[in-house]
Length: 459
Image 1 (cartoon, helix red, strand yellow):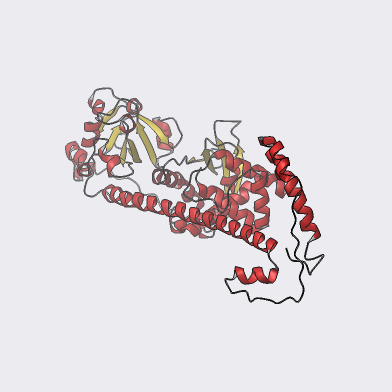
Image 2: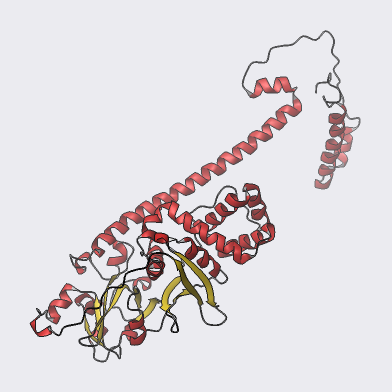
């Protein structure tokens, strides 16, 4: 997962328990690295799990509690990183916020390469209408992070209570029950009776509609496609055949549900991301570009009892668009996707530049730390062979004035038979024997001539 997850965990521990505790956790987790985690770098999931396990051991706090605290810290980290405005406009209430949370994760997944974002969808509990949040993730055991994030998202003065309603062992995903504890009540809008005035309203022909909305798919209760936009019909020609169903050409990416007419109606206010199935696209492109992600909304038309999927191509940049046989001209002028594609091109360039800058900064900090270590080694060597007063002057590149001593004694020593001893130990084992002997001998000399014991002796 991306480094901003590990970095948020680092912030939590340092802020609450101190930097020394974080170093102990890193050591117990066998994390061999200096400095902070890089926000835009991808790390192995096992590293994060090891850090959490080490935090449980060191802090003596249950894993679920740590994950909830981490969720709150991660939400604050996202706010401090410039996502505060995006998080605020996701919805005026926790219900609206969570309804749009899945769309935000899908958007981030397109911006950050290799990101495996979780998926969310909302329903209401049948017996009392309470909000249910469905959480899908390939990473097990992290559901308590969602509790921390949800509780931390006190948008517009609303507090919520979150509890796990069903675990992954009970079904294929985790379900949360969310209860609003306090906050402003949203006024109920009056229902307006629908007046049958279709015959008096201006009409639009199917051909014009298909040209104005080139990316749309209309289907009935049997999911049979009855109309598509011009561009969809061009890149997915199978839709022009009779009895072609939506499920024949598209798979659901978000939300996690079976694509049925009833499920669509019950999640009509959800952002949908659908992906073309293998072999349905007609594009002369490499295998990794022979699919298309369509992102948009489902719109129910009660007059004809059909659903229209109004969508746009979810692509990263211009190259991602053209390799799939699409062009900017395929996107209508009124569609903001044109601007999004061009902005994504600039974002990708800025992202690469920022990531390279982050890597270079980390490398520079690592070089500085290594230089500091070497400097300390040099200082230790300098102070071990020279008097402190002389070493201080040399270290600060100042001249050392000569001193006069009325009487001084010099000791010259040699090892009797050293040459013969070396000749008898010329192999690799013998060389190490000689080194150990010299080390032991001169260590004794160092002890005997220690200036702390004999202040008048210089060595």
